Structures are given as C-alpha cells and as structure tokens.
Amino acid sequence: MTAYTPSDPPVSTTTGLRLPDADDQVVRVSKLMAGRGMCSRREADRYIEQGWVLVDGIVVTLGTKVHPSARIVLAEPARQHQHTLISVIVNKPVGYVSTQPEPGYTPAIALVTADRQFGPGPTLERSWLRGLSVAGRLDIESQGLLLFTQDGRLANQIIGDAGSVDKEYLVRVTGRLGRNGLERLRHGLELDEVQLRPALVEWLNDDQLRFVLREGRKRQIRRMCTLVGLEVIGLKRVRIGNIRLGNLPEGQWRLLDPNERV
Image (cartoon, rainbow, N blue to C red; front, side):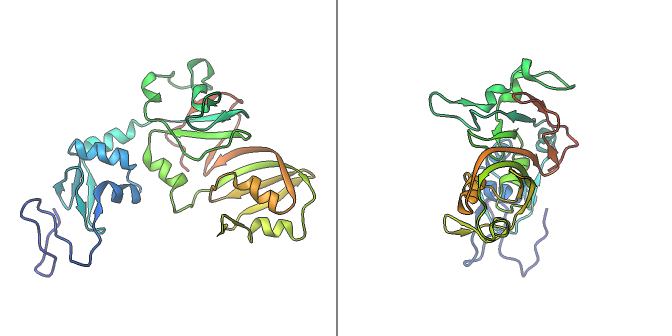
C-alpha cells in the first residue's frame, strides 16, 4: 500500500484512499484506467466488480473517484483474464459495414465463421465472438484489414486520442491533382474545421497513391482527395501498426497472433 507522510492529503477513514484537495479534479477509476491504456472502461468496470482493482493498495468499488495521480494495480486474476482475450483480423470486401448496420446491410463480423477461417491455429469457438469490437472502421465502399478485438488495451492503442499508430492504405484515384496537391495531402488540409496531422502520401503508379495516417476521421482519405481534385475509386487498408493484411484472402479471417503488436 502507498505510504503517506504528514504532508500528504488526508486519508478517508472509510475507504483508506487519500482525499483530494479542494482544487483537485477527481476521476472515476474506470475512466482513469482506460485513459492509461490498462483496459477499456467496460473491462475496468468488470474488474472492479470482481474486486480485482486496487488503488493505492485498496480494493475499490464501482463508481469510486480518485486523484488522477493515484496508483492503480490489477490483481492477478485480471491480468490472467487479459491473456485470454481474442483478436481477429478480417479482409473486408466492399459492401460490408464495419459495425452493426441498418437493415439491408451486412456487418463484417458476419464473415467470422468456421468455414472462412484462414491459416493454422485453433478453430473458431463461439466464446470468441462475445465482446468483439471493431478497432478502426472502414466504410462500406472500402476493403482490407479490419481488426476486431476483445482487448480494450489494443483498441485504445489504435483509436485512442494519442494517435501514434500508423494505418496504411492503397488508394486508386481518378481526376487531376490540383496545384501543390501532393504537398497539401501530406500536410495542409482541414476537415470539419480541424487541421489534419501530417501524413505520408506518395504515388505508386499513375493512378494509385499510398497513404500512411495516424488519425481516422470519417471518410478521411476520400474527403482529402476531393479537396485536391481527385476522386477515390478504390481504397484498401493493408496495415495497422505492425499488423499486416498479408496474404489473407478477401472475405476470410484469421486469429491475431499473440506476438503481433501494433
């Protein structure tokens, strides 16, 4: 347990946790855990309910708020549970949506079936489908690497505010690139009144560009291209961090290897 000196803020006689100063902004433990990349907020709530979360050496309950600098530790059962979490990658074809769709649309998770599994490894278990969430969407007109995971840590790395993970796309276009268009694609465009982060953009051939981004605004590449006089006619994601689409056939899926890291 964290030791307190006389100069530390007072400690609650009820919970044993240090009481915040008047000027402190206390935060829910689950939110703090998610912000630190320890797990998702949903996972945090589950671990707290099980009594698997200690703050400054004290087991906490749901709804507990603490100082943002609090020391949070997961008990061994929570760490063991994290090792069992499943992630899969799908080579999404055009025409499938990333998440739960409106009537008439098919979600890409429907492709995760026993007969579509690719490569060696354990065969599909029904429990793998529980709690799988998409980490980085692709629109219905795009194809390629789509990651589903039960692991909030992995999802936070990919779609969290830090935006430190590369996403690589091959983009086929038509039209005439405007003046300084390539430089503007690399840095200089705004979407929704927000300056976009620098991107790596280069020509691969006469009608295909390679994009590497560290953000993922809605239909970002298509909208970027429109701003410089191009129209996207094909878009394929081939990499998220160190996770590559590789030779995974279109419409099939495989388990993410434990050694694969973003």
